[in-house]
Length: 418
Image (cartoon, rainbow, N blue to C red):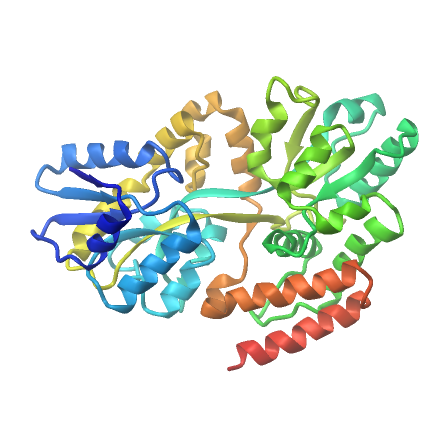
């Protein structure tokens, strides 16, 4: 077993020819999936002594890794055989022919075991091109002590969130306390927020027929609710328009907000011993609007593993990929490394009882939605830019919500029709 660390060795691995038919190269960062990588390699090679796995430790900075992959894949390098991709790369890489379709290489029931919302991010032309390795996403955090103080149930709908926010802020009488904080700066997280709100109202990026419909009535209504939270109800601080995930987390942790909606990484600092809100908060699934209790409103992210279509060892790569992402390995990664599984059945395992937080995250992922990267492919970065800009225009009231979403629709129609 070889472990390549240097950047030069990494680049060389992308262009080197494999020595033996059963030599495989796996490219994934050392931090993203942590000790699970080495553990899984050791388990697999113990069971398959004729197979050698080289772990190519690529950068954990996504942009650097992406450039490395693109260089090798454009040159049709046969290595790495298996490599990790961000959720928003999977669609583009599949469209460009840089990921081998897994249907046929893997059994249908193996693929079907994964979270269907995540699988959608790597599904192009009805074929799955990568398997979800681990998940993350946005969740709805709340001050459990304040809800208890005012005799309030945990809100499930946005209407209930607004009512609870008003009750708490009026009751506390603290001008520095807000009802709701989140990441509404012009960043990718804003688009994730918008997808949560709109999908929670029965809308979303696409309509029921798969057509782009960002200016649908449901989306206009949900976006107007976001605008009104800030400007009409004053339930969010003005600073939300510049807030990134950690900015929002800081306000909530300082005791300056009743509700917070950001990614799951904030749970650790919020619950730390020196956190002012430790023991005073909890979280639930992202709210939905009344009448849409089945809505997939939890915007998800994560990383996938796929196979290089130029690999000379596709069947061996598929076997290793299936093993690496299987239930047993995901369960161990969840219990020992706190990585959220992408196979729903793992959350039902009794061993998950030792990680109640991760189990709750998993329950929220049952209501997951992914960004529209599979359908837009290489154009996804521009799609996100358009949406970020027009949502920002609406939130700043530089345009009405309808004007902003109509303008976004026109730009997307032109972009995606090419």
